[in-house]
Length: 188
Image (cartoon, rainbow, N blue to C red; front, side, top):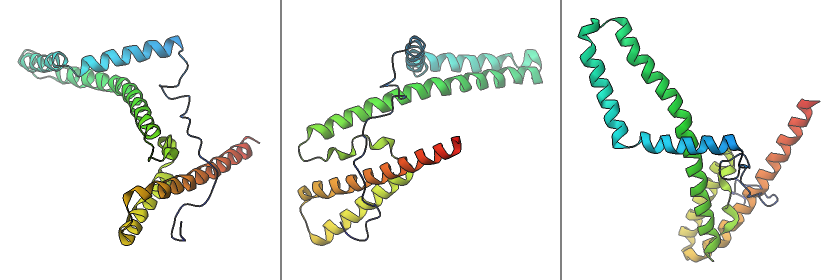
């Protein structure tokens, strides 16, 4: 590329997603059960029936207010109930979101891998650090500006994109080796 490129040269990127992700985790019985439970509850919680039950619960709570003289205990019931439900739903929804995210990434990876003009160097980019992603975005913006000023055809961008991805991969490998050496030093 040129001297303005924020990405240094480095080795190829490891594009295999983490085995701790839902799509690649070993099928432990507890993991399978939690995944099935989270999927079922998430689907049900997003249904009109669940919304209707929530509205009915709030209406019943409101109507019961005069019977309890709008006491602190009456208010505590709705506050505690909604807090507990919200707290638990965060984990269930996050599990489903993680699973959906892995599925979307796999579908995008398939599209990248199947298109002959696409650079497959970005497969697995979701595991990059935020700093690396910002550098990559800056490099693509720079590439777009260069291509626009050169008036180059868009089909030539594949080689440039591959070069950007290769440089990002080298930077990631260098960061990973630095983190590994830092962890070894802390362990000693």
